[in-house]
Amino acid sequence: MRPLADLRVIAVEQYGAGPFGSLHLADLGAEIIKIEDPSSGGDVGRYVPPYTDGEDSLFFETFNRGKRSLSLDLSTAAGREVFEDLVAESDAVYSNLRGDVPARMGLTYADLKHVNPRIVCCSLTGFGMTGPRAKQPGYDYILQGLAGWMSLTGEPDGPPAKSGLSMVDYSGGFVAAMALLAGVHAARRDDQGMDCDLSLFDTAVGLLTYPATWHLSAGFAPERTRHSAHPSLVPFQVFAAADGWLVVGCAKEKFWRRLAEVLELPDDPRFATFALRRQHREELLEILERAFATRTVAGWLAVLEPAGVPCGPVNDVAAALADPHTQARNMIVRTEHPAFGTVTQVASPVRVGDEPPAYRRAPRRNEDFGYVTDDLLGYGPEQVARLRAAGAFGA
Image (tube, rainbow, N blue to C red; front, side, top):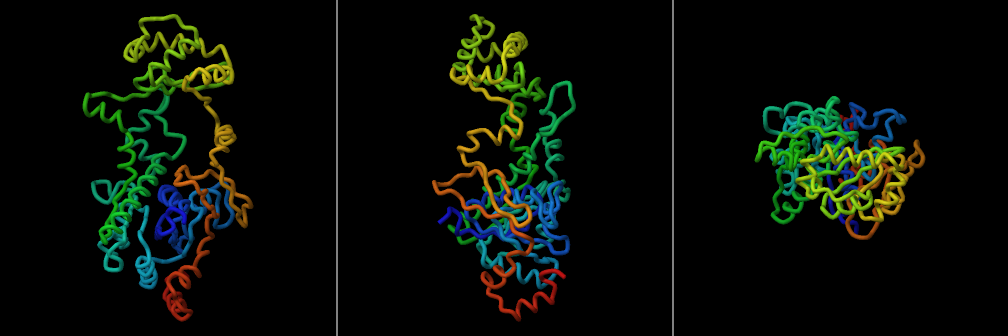
């Protein structure tokens, strides 16, 4: 059995953060039944340009492989009836909505415990279900600014900058998946479910880590650094070579000694320790920048890697995907899609055991209607017809 083959999750999810979290559960074998609102055409991620085809997009494929889809109108009594029947057969209800919406839609443990006392209700919202911002919509870029990330990103004399990827969304998805698994573990042990109140805001603030500790405990004022330099370790940053950029980092004294040997630098008491290199940062970096400019990136990697100096090229996306290590680690996934043909994407980094995951394309909207109504819930034709007439599955 795959690691999570005995886990069923009802996902009222959309766009990026929520689907990214449940994607990893699906890759590990969990059954993710994705509830899509028929009145809005389902998950908005289906329509994200530029690569779209009707109700499918490569964006949607990225975040929803291996899942099932059911069109269900939760605003109707009939739709709610089907939803609660699903809850009775599931381990968790997972959502990513605005903070006040789960309670309004009846997706909390208090709303569902009468159906299934062991249900885990995991809500990933922008700002959480409590606090003064609970009713505000939360998006990755906004959270990167609000949580201080953008103030730390970019060159010191440039504007604040976001990460090139939606790291608050993706980290929030990982946090929600971890909380869901912990909740299900506890529910199976204690025969009682619970709420898991996760937020992108908490995730972003939590990832401030040691700069936050330094600030709160010692008054440290984080600031942007030139060439993406580490705030305390010198050298640890990007350097310009003759034909591009590379990252060199000396996170241990032994790495500095190896770098100095490769560069044939004379012993200099100014650079003898972590603290002294930080104190004389400007003088040291001037020496290093002048040295690194004399060879190509490949030329430097050819001497730094054998010497055991932590380093790497600043790749573009194409080069990162073509790296031999990407292939060796089985990080490329291929699925077949009726409109897009072979869809090639990246695998989940979550690995459990030796058996490789089995991948399946993302579902077409409502593709799993028959599986849910007939196989899972055991509805007969008359019951399906009654629910359909009552608007459970949309117009």
